[in-house]
Length: 199
Image 1 (tube, rainbow, N blue to C red):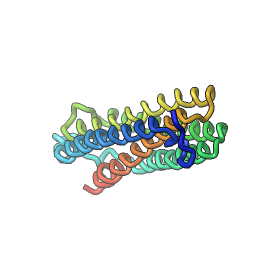
Image 2 (spheres, rainbow, N blue to C red):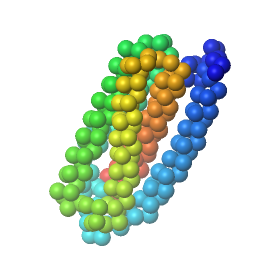
Image 3 (spheres, rainbow, N blue to C red):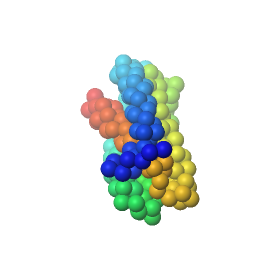
Image 4 (cartoon, helix red, strand yellow):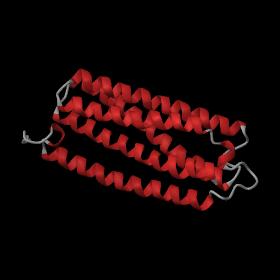
């Protein structure tokens, strides 16, 4: 397989280029999925069925912590790519581990948030608003969980094989996935939490 040395390692083979293009197409399908979930949420957000509305249950401080953790993880993920392009295995693994730790912190906060809502009587069955809310955030949280599992397997592979065109491609692809989840969270933060707190 021919290797192109003038390009970043993750783009150094035609197979890598095709795999990365394929992942961009996959992210297009993910955009459709989350657009549908957001559309459903906007349709149902006013249907509280005498249950709690967003401004009654959202805890802004906790949402800010979640946002800080996830957006910081996007920065550390970029540092991992920087280390990869400098052929620094230790630095790459270190920043991937930091990214995962921040992602785990985000998930911990989100699970605690959901537990708080249930204690407040806000469940999936309470209203159309809460059903769409839990579906949207749960889908995002599931994606974060899958990303953490994926990153764990990747770290093991990098530790065993080092930085190769294959591991570089996989690292770059997971960084695209992680940044995508952060962008989705910015929309959730803005149009679900901030909007919900003022409605």
